[in-house]
Length: 105
Image (tube, rainbow, N blue to C red; front, top):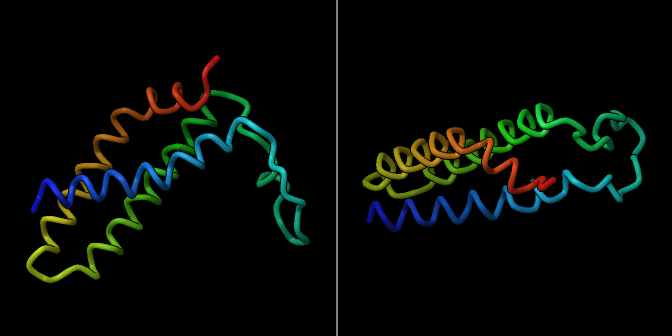
């Protein structure tokens, strides 16, 4: 059960992060909407900015995973939350490698 939950959370995280990481290379194609901050339409130009964005994305993925865990059966909730936290810890530890993979030179 724990392994299945971990795989599901990993798949969810990858599904959430992959498009976001790839989108950072190209300038946004959308048209700015009234009231949108200009920074939303500027690509991350430095490795530090890319890493900062990736950290935010990993944290957001953890929040989504926790939300999904809260909707799980009470018996599975603890294992789900533990797996989500472990995935978060691993992703943060590998953030630099993830950034380099998303932004090859």
